[in-house]
Image (cartoon, rainbow, N blue to C red; front, side):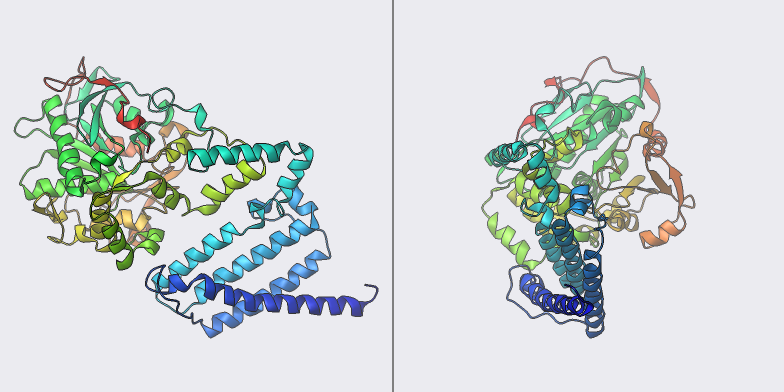
Length: 573
């Protein structure tokens, strides 16, 4: 091109090309979203309608972006702010830099188109989710033919990185999931879940672990922790320095934990009622028997995390309906009791999906743990899926050891009937906050009768239990309440030991609980560091006097069966 006319002609052709791509983007969205725009992901295709004003603005932004991309192509390639394309290899390779910039432009435009769809909010959320998944999967960084960093590494290692990547791929195919960490480094009971204790009770659903005291005296009211049954309990006991279990023991609480069994076919008929009656209520009963709190007026403190909190809340409602009050206080960590605001998970839930699951498990069966794990990973596809595809397979890297990601890959099955009840009664129909709507263990559930002090925690960036969903429990539990918001997400916000000196938490001192979390936050104050110390101070006020620490595990017929962490937690899905 030797003249300005040549450049002008080329620029015109380039703009025409992106004009064609604009039309292709509109067509792609129509093809991508028919299921999302229908009743459920598998419905009949329905044409999408767009806001005319938003569509016009988007088209102008797209063409301007295309022009800017053309102009940048005539200059030095800038480093991308997107970490997938931030390496020097991308900026030094004009073709790679252009493919990345073009992809990002198209991604922004498709997401803008999704927001411009004229439909109800749930349909738009489903379309946004589908677009996000598609764009995450089609990023040029995911493919060796376009990934400049992977190509550079292949040249530098004379093809060794490609060979190693193939080995990693075969390894992950054999194990059935993408490796997020070097799993060979960890072993449950050896370098995770190491707090000293013993199994003092077991049945077909759970083992009960009691931990060795670290103080000469303990509070007379013991503490029972109920973790989520969709994961292993040792998220609460990863390493000594970040173990909530060890922290509770060190604060002078005689601490017990439910270790859920990883269900096999023998539990294929197990129901939600079983998890309440035979697990949560049985664990409360056994802890009281071991600690001498089974006498009249004897009580324990209890904590539930995530689904474990929903199980605990349901169990407390059953006890209230029976006129029993064996629990002095309850702590709910990132827990749904009110399922009005379930965040991104709502895109999966509708009548068709719930009926499909009910039909699938009408005669029993298991929801495989890997299916659950994959679903949660794809809620953050770039961080928890494609990041490892690129590192493990294209670059031939072994992911570094990380205890939390090892736990994340240690999946757990669920009994189908239990899961189907949970899906309809909570996520779809939100029965727990409707007095009398749900019947569990022969009792009508009414959270308004669960009148005891509660400590409620929610994480600000939680994508599994949004902060508004965690806060909503304040509107249904009638007892004295304390709500705290922590920084970070579903796991990192909870597992935040004081010694780390990380993150902040927010508290409100006036004792008021307005209708929404946003209103609550407007009157809250930020405090540096972990929320654990605040919780510990609160719990001590409900733990009773101090007594001599026990010299042995269990009591009476509840004797030590085996050392913690026990057999159940080691079973693989």
